[in-house]
Length: 131
Image 1 (tube, rainbow, N blue to C red):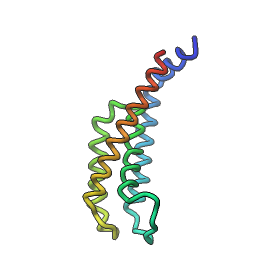
Image 2 (image 1 turned 90 degrees about the horizontal axis):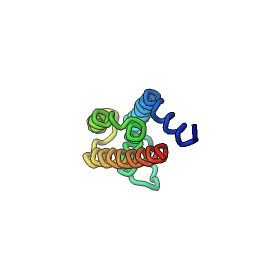
Image 3 (image 1 turned 120 degrees about the horizontal axis):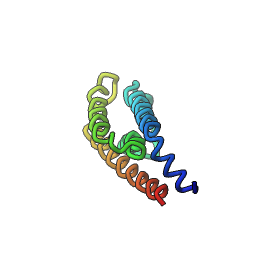
Image 4 (image 1 turned 90 degrees about the vertical axis):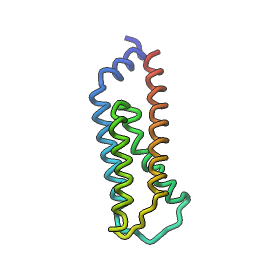
């Protein structure tokens, strides 16, 4: 068996493992995002990026594992991720943070970027292993 054939077999034969890793990584990232966004606010420190950029990056990271490893799950994980972003904004005033529609929009933009990047990477991986 040549190396590309071996890689193709590994990609196809380990679908259940890929799916489990994708869902576990997505769940872990969601927990981290919840902790970071729902913890009481710390003293404001000016960062390199805006708050909206951090939201977009976090939600892009949230979408990436499923997009790369378990694309079929996007049909249900992305609506849940969008609801998760909305719930965060609704809960934030309870923990002393402000709710902003722009944060939710940044979450949605991040999800779109994460899905697009993940599906691009998935296509590259699949084209590489199918050689």
